[in-house]
Image (cartoon, rainbow, N blue to C red; front, side, top):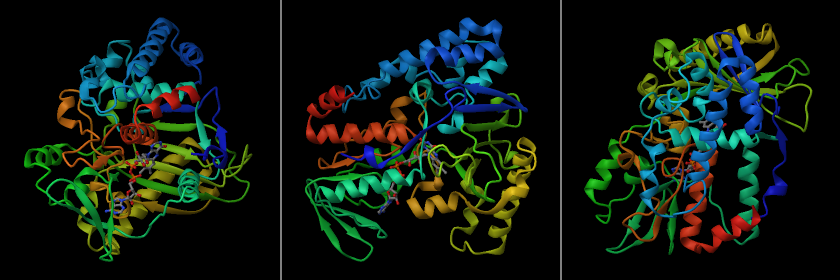
Length: 419
Ligand SMILES: Cc1cc2nc3c(=O)[nH]c(=O)nc-3n(C[C@H](O)[C@H](O)[C@H](O)COP(=O)(O)OP(=O)(O)OC[C@H]3O[C@@H](n4cnc5c(N)ncnc54)[C@H](O)[C@@H]3O)c2cc1C
């Protein structure tokens, strides 16, 4: 697509691209399969074999995953693999009985909102495997990717519409014919791809081509948690650049930090932003803490209310205090901050309940939470995090699956050759 040159990357510290903080103790994830295991083995010398086994299994699950491997396009048979039916807690417990090491290995859970007994092992494996191979930040922020994609689409004759909402998807008795925008304008087409949250999509299609059972199944899949995000702006040259992502757990047991409103701020991820190649100081950072939509639902139609502003301020101050315990003195170096809540995400992206990672996958019943990229409307395809897998990696994989369905398997062959 010719976008790679427009996306400058900055490599995260290969000795500690992620740092897991458990009750104040720091554990680094190092890049490279062997180095990952070897580095953690220095902290868990009795568990060196188990760490080697963990890396081997993560790698083999990821490599065997038809989606990661981009094979079996359109086939739900990948769910038959055992890693789809084992939850992450079982997976890790099958490798080590050491609770501290279990918590460290599960430390990057906020990248996919891992839930005890629910999240399938393959989600953990594909994401961890990808980071173990190499981990980068986008210089200038990840919206650089969106801007590069826009330029590429326009270069190839495409046209982009922003700031307007698709309010209805129109079908005849066989296929989809058009979308209606909030301005009333109709956009006709031969093929349509939706990346909307599936609940938002169902609410915009009246066609009986989508059967009631399908709609009810989708409505019954629970969402992942949403989050409270704190965007920090630092005083110039005051905060040394942290070239690692930090996953903070107030407790030693990662599961004990599972979310409830009373436990807000006991688990979060914290990342400096990379504004230029190899910066000495950070200009800004983002802190993402789990938060439930229900906590802000009452302000959905009156967001300016004082209570909402107070809650945001309270939460921001709590997080800054916690950050100050990890990096003493950091609060004095903050020039200003902005916040967003589950309502922000729901409002700006139509993601139901502001779910950070869309609909949850369920290891106990993978077929119930599986939504194919194909629908009963033959020219409507689905992509996005609720379809394939969560996060940037899952969304990219899903986009390739959809494109291969339209363009044919030669697309996958081309990607293989390029790789
Ligand atoms: C604060 C935060 C930090 C994150 N950090 C990471 C990270 O570090 N790594 C990672 O891998 N993932 C991260 N994620 C998750 C990642 O952002 C998502 O998994 C990914 O963006 C989902 O992509 P998507 O295309 O499914 O949905 P979206 O990114 O939400 O895109 C859907 C688009 O459709 C538009 N849309 C929806 N409805 C309509 C409509 N009716 N009409 C017109 N347009 C519509 C929305 O405005 C949006 O632009 C983070 C998420 C959050 C909230």
